[in-house]
Length: 259
Ligand code: URA
Image 1: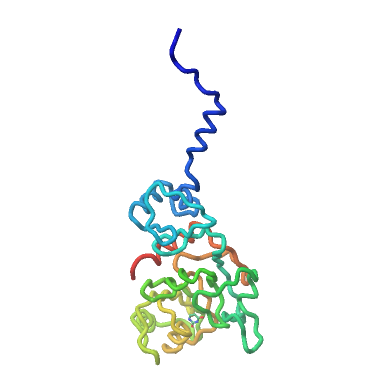
Image 2: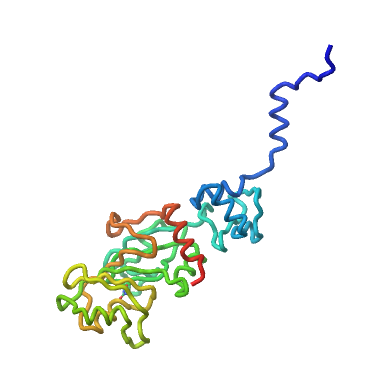
């Protein structure tokens, strides 16, 4: 005879196990599914104190309800939260960046879903084409727009006056005296005569047009081809798409660093 108790049936063991399970999803799993890296990387983010849940620094092993809890990395909400959207639009010429135009011209928001309402991060002139980021995430938008983060914007400018001389290219690179002050250093290349690739990290009104005009080469056509890590040559004018998780992650990391 044996004094050992018989094992409880399997269903009873499973019921006991699920009763002992804590509520919610592991935070590192939520972060990983938002595209922030492997679970290991996400554990490191938590251990470094960079993740908060409802404003409190999270500890390893924390569980969350992604629908109810506000999860942030370096103070920026993570993109799994269903009410935050991030669109990359290829703005066509003639469409204005403001949400309403006094001259009745079409606006960028008319090219996007009506809900949730989004706004443009920075602006492009009505005549300028190319990439524009639109979101309802005010925090990320402020970080991107803030000059201290120096997010690069790259433009292709077709200019009048043919080949731009090396001296004028140097001037564009080093800084041009405009009526609102000298421009910061820029990267400038001439992939073909009369076409400039200009990369700046300021966002002054009509800056590229004014810079080129100042060296005697007014812009005929201006296209923004990159915003920080965001580029997409396959997006047709007027077309848009949501940012991928990987793009969102790189962008968020770029603006999380102090400038
Ligand atoms: N520089 C310009 O001149 N126009 C734009 O739309 C953006 C940058």
